[in-house]
Amino acid sequence: MIHATRIYSGIAEIATLSRGPVPRIAEAMSELGRIEDGAIAVDRGRIAWVGPRRRSRREIRLRAGGNVVELHGASVVPGFVDAHTHALFAGDRSNEIALKLAGKSYTEILAGGGGILSTVRATRAASTATLRSEARGRLGRMLRSGTTAAEVKSGYSLDHEGELRLLRLVPALARASGVRMVATFLGAHAVPPEFEGHTDAYIDQIVRRTLPIVARERLARFCDVFCEPGFFSVAQSERLLRAALGFGLGAKIHADEFVYSGGARLASSLHARSAEHLLLTPSDDRQALAASGVTAVLLPVTPFALFAGTRSPGREMVDARVPVALGTDLSPNSEVESMTTVLAHAVYSARLTPAEAITAATVNAAHASDLSAEAGTIAVGRPADFVAFDVPSVERIPVRIGSIPTLISRQGIPVASR
Ligand code: ZN
Image (cartoon, rainbow, N blue to C red; front, top):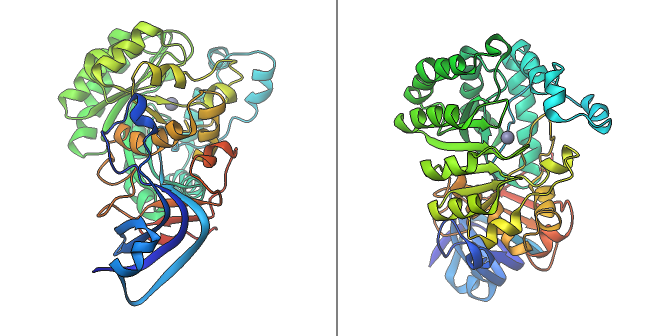
């Protein structure tokens, strides 16, 4: 007999994602580990039992004071893992919408002193309390839309102390928000104004000065770099990521977003954990990602928010047998906090099937974020982080554009709606 403090019952369909390889590729991305007419029992914040409801009555005993939560035919998936966010920033750039509508590109807006450099000015000028409270607001909204774990990147201070300040906010933000967080050091998000024309010297500063502290104080699990012409070259990106790997950090790379950069190919040669964006990654480089097992973190809302007129190559990546994960790319440039919005774009724009999109937003996103032991599946012994939606099957979640959860369980406890 299994003891539980709470039983969630009356679930039309559960996608457990609990069996199969991690990360999933190709056909395995469609295997959701479904249970129909199911129940989930929770004990001390972890999943104690998951299975068909008819077996739950004889296999589970409620502890004194425990209760049953009836979900009235909702469907349940693991809490979403947002594999790519830039949630640590101050200021806003909504004024740039008019520039974008007038045809200015990200790179042109940047050249005019706007874009990321305006966020860098605002972030450097913001007090730590302001940075903390703004990020806390974002994480709260992410949680209430079903995200229970997220990767978060630094990268809006672009100076030694400022980047460390951003990373040092992460543990307290995770505790305060209830969102499980993994930090990524993205000091090489852009070249700061002080180093304009001296990109190698900036990489030098990161490698010699900042990275050793990030590693020693365990401020980040990953190091990332914005590998695009005009930002950091393949050679500069390689130098930085090799140094990060030497310090025991994992490697991630922003690649092939605005133009083909060769960043995906570099990720393959370094066996990086992930290559991200990949809007313009050609077929040969998709093959290279597949061969080296690098996860493609796709951000299908970003081209939409940038008026880019391109689409995230979800279908092409799955067909090339690349493991695909999803993220919001939450930033002042694409202010999306909701993974259900990402799921809809993953289907209607990136052309994943609904089942593939769910896999990409859970078990594969957990892998990309090094959170597989704690997130992305509904399995006995794992934290009881899951989300219910008022739909008869899990595949309806991405189909209903911008689905709103009816219940979010964070370690077995329902998250308050506000
Ligand atoms: Zn990004």
